[in-house]
Image (cartoon, rainbow, N blue to C red; front, side):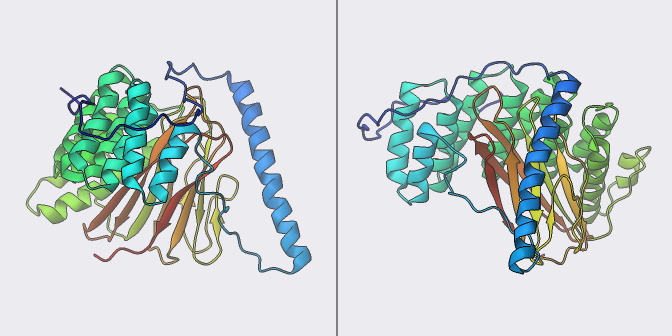
Length: 381
C-alpha cells in the first residue's frame, strides 16, 4: 500500500462533549479546469492593483510621518487564516492544551470521517505530542480517502515528509504515484526528488529531475530553472557523501554542474488549481521582495509569479547574509475545496555539499489571508 494504515478510531480516548456548532469545511471535489486566460489575467490584475494600492498607501504614510522607509511583515491574528473546527483545534494547540485539542479533533473526525482537515488537525496534534507513528496514520489516511487525487496525494506526502524516517518512505511512495497521475505538475517531480535525496537515493533523485526536465511545463514560469538548480544542489550533496560516485554521468546532457556556492532557497508550492498565491520575503535590513519587486537589495531574486495554481515559486539567495528572513504567503483565493494547502521548502546549501532542508506545510481557509511561514535563521553546518 502507498499509505499508512487507515485510521482506527476504536481508541481509549476520552469521549468529547458535543462541540459548539461550527462551520464545516466542504468536502473535496475535483478541481475545475483553469479559467480562460483573459478572465484569469483580469482577476490577477485586480488582485495586483489592490495589493499594490495597499503598499503604496503604506509608503505614502511613511513619507508623511517621516518613518524609516522599510517594509515589515503584515501582522495578523495567528488564527486569522483558519475557520470553523480547524480554527478551534489550532486555538487549543496554540494555547498549549494538546490533550483537549486531541479530544476535540477525534470527535470532529468521528462526525465527518471524510473531512481532510480533521485528519490534518489530528496529524498536527500528534506531531506536537511526539507521536509520529500516529501522525503518519492520520496523514496516510488522506491517501486512502482520495487515492486518485494527485493534489491530495501531494498534500499527504508534504505532511509525511515532516516526520523524518517515519514518514519519508511513505512520502516518496505517494509522490511517485502523484507524478504518474499528473506529470504536467512540476511540483510533484521536485517533491519526489527531494524526498529521495533526503533518504540518500541521490542517483534516483537526479533521474526523477531528468525526466521532469523533459516536460514542457509551459504553464509554469521558471519551472525548469528551479528543477535544474535543485539537481545542482542534490549533485553537490551526493558528491560530498560519495566521492567515488559517477555524479558527472548522472548529470550528462542536463547542462548542470554540482552547485559550488552557498545558497539559500525558499520554494513555495500549493495544491490548488486556478489560484494565485503571492510569496513575500522580508530580510533583517527592512527589505521586502514580492511579485512586483522581485529582488532584495541584500541579495536574492523571486523567479516567477505563478497566478494559475500549484507553483512552484522560488526565491534564491547566493551567499545569504541578511538573516533572519521572514516569510509569508498571501492567499488570494482558497479555491473550490474551501481551503488551501501546500508547503514551503527551506533549502540551505553551504556550497560544499552540506545541506539543511526544512519542510513547512500550511493550511489557509480565509480568502486574502496572510499565512505566516516562519523565520529563517542561519544554520550551523
